[in-house]
Image (tube, rainbow, N blue to C red; front, side, top):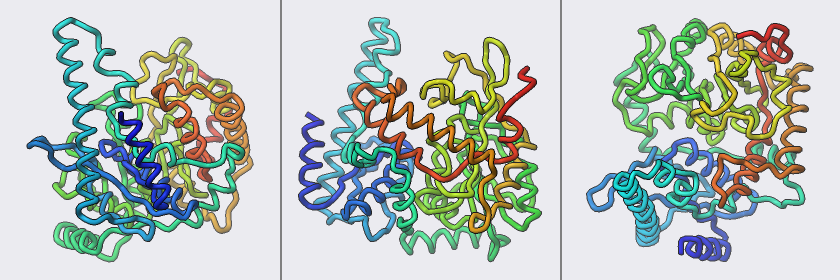
Amino acid sequence: MFRLIYKISDYFGNKLNILILSPNYRSFGNSIEEIFFGLLHCHDKGKKLLLIKPFNNFFFKKINISNEYLYELEHDLLLKPNFITNFFLSLMMTLMASVGYLESKARLIIASIFGLNSNFFSNKELSYNSLQHFGRKLLWGFSEEEPYSKKKWESLDNEYSAPSLPYSLIQKSNKFIEDNFPEVHDKDWVTLHVLDNTLTRYARGADINSYYPAVEYLINKGFTVFRMGDSSMPKCFKLKGLIDLAHIKHENFLDLYLVKNASFHIGVGSGPNYLTHLFKKDLLVTNLTEWSTSLPRKKGNFFILKNLYKKSTKEKIAISKLFTKGFDFQINTNFYEDRDLLLKDNTSDEILSVLKDFMEFDDSESSYSKLQTKFDKVKNAWLKHELIDNNADITYSSDKEKDLQRVRSIALSTLNGTMGHSYLEENWEIENNDL
């Protein structure tokens, strides 16, 4: 039934030259990614983009929307429907979301009564069915005759113009900063987001304590650093020039404003990274666990990986060896206990070193090092073999969207960011592999 609704939506969207899209409202990173690629698609195809979101509340139950202000962004390609059209689309999406929610609750109750295992109420297929998929199959659309045309994606990225925030939200953001952080007036700032792995088991997370030398370096360079996140994260040390926004009550639009107006963003493999793509900002990624698609898109933007070890032998895995395994050798999920892998966080020295590499690189004058160029060449050849020539079976995906995830991975991998040079030098080949 739902697939028929999506087909009808795509059909009328094509007739009207509109991409009707329902971003994954529950996930901050996924929703940003889909809006970004939606805008690229519309620019490429000469369409307008219409975003659908569910109601904030339905029958007195709050619907968790990661950041509702994403739907207020302004762009020449973003179509704002009238009240009736918007109400109808939101109602339809809310009803569809409610069906998925009720099914999951019913399965949970049945499982508790009959002692069924968790796979009955929580698995990849149910997760896929619980989402709404308006426009998703068109998002990363391109001719399969040229499925890995990096030149095309470079052209789209270069031509792409970033959306803006409504003037009212800009005013509110400026007032919040003036009222709470007057010392930031006329200063440049950097945003920082580090998922915590000291209280949780996030493979993508890290300990905020390892970032303080880099934060102090930025402060000494004249920057203010805004630490983003939520109150579940450990509090930061008190440093003059470091603002722990995660523990200061604020509206979600402020996160969008801060990243959009930052000099650059430092993150792990988390949602705010995608804001840098959306707003065309510079990005430095640390403690990354996925080395081919969740990378910076701009030239001169760097990343470093967590240090990987084989669980069975305690040997460290050299970067050059990463491309000897299939696509699923990567860590695409938060948890990895079922893998022959151990992860070790980046050290403070590794984070500070890549920050210096990043800040010293002038993309208008500099070229990547020979080792960076070699890394990119090997990575791209591996991706072509896995995703295109070998038609990789991406096992972390639902059966219904495996090909979509493959195409998505191709689109995400056509980028110009690369691994930090100093980290590559240390880890490309490793003589002493012991943990």
